[in-house]
Image 1: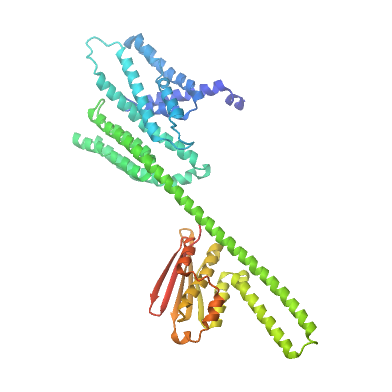
Image 2: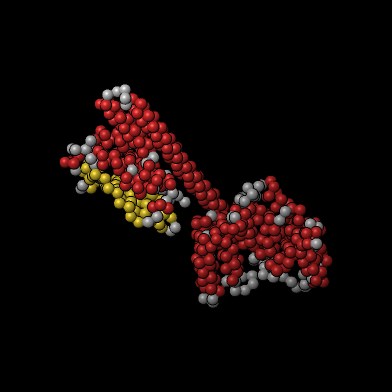
Length: 528
């Protein structure tokens, strides 16, 4: 039954007309010629409601207008009542249609062209002002009624209509855009975390309430006018901070605050303040639209940079996986070669002298050691079996340095090293080898000390590594530098290449000369 009612076009159009009429009647109760809120409501509905419901909107507005025309017929005459039966929303439909279809008000599905919105608002305000003037010009005036100043009336209604549109329409379009761009499950969380919401609720609102209290607290006309004129400052502040979103919220609050300072109907000071607020909102909307474009471009650039970093990190990790697979393949080949050599030596044991057999076995052991070092340099066995701490303390770099005569020590402090991403582990291990090769390039290092410390801040893990290369001339003379550099098998690209690799994980690398040698420090952050 309910689905049948929803699927009935006549019922849907009737519901749209009824809801629009209800909102129109409610907003007419809080509107006046200086601040026509239902004008903003009228334009907002035209902008957001599909065109197939526009006839229902005209019918919905015709109901309250017909009631007013019939009730005031004896007072203002039948000609005035006839003019009042023309729904102003119908007069604005051609303008809104041209704005939406020809002038591309909605540049994309989500983004609004502010320049077209302001032109549409101004054009609709002019049309509705002329409609009001036409109704007043044909109305019956009581005897002795002073002549009307149509210029003053036109200015009052134009400012009221335009400011009413600026009070409602930008805020509604902002809510629509944010609603569409934010996933349903994240809307409340993002609202609570939004800097615009916090600055508006905790900063802008108290300031405007204070200015409204000063302007309406009976402190004198001069204080009231200063308070009114100062209400545009928060609008400018939010525009500079958040683009036209800030202007939409700030403009609504500022125009409402100005109305609360009005001491009496048709107050000239209030109209002057509203003109200033309307001018400020219009100019800041244009300026804020440009800021919003720049903010979106900056966010897109940051997103592209994060995606590029993520791609580089994945590429680095895939390269490490290939090296690991190659190391495991070499291990398998090494085992097969060892079995084959043992079988051949067992067969040749009775055919060759014992001294020659020992030479064969010695050469086989050397080949096996070389294959093991090659596989271990590609991906340490200790890393595969016992994790990164074992690889740092007992891996290929540690064994190569110790075998060549350079003292190597590694201290690991803090917690959470195992919770870092595999990419961080990769960079830590490879960086130690490259930095060790760089420190040993001058051939005056006798001891290398590595210190790691991990931790977490604001839910994100980090690790700091410090490598100290201590100069020791006496110990350096005994180091087998050729064997060392060959065993490290570094790329030899220097610290700049290491700095680029560290930058993939938003890290920094620093080099500092000390009294005892060279200290290289780096910090890495776990990818978001």
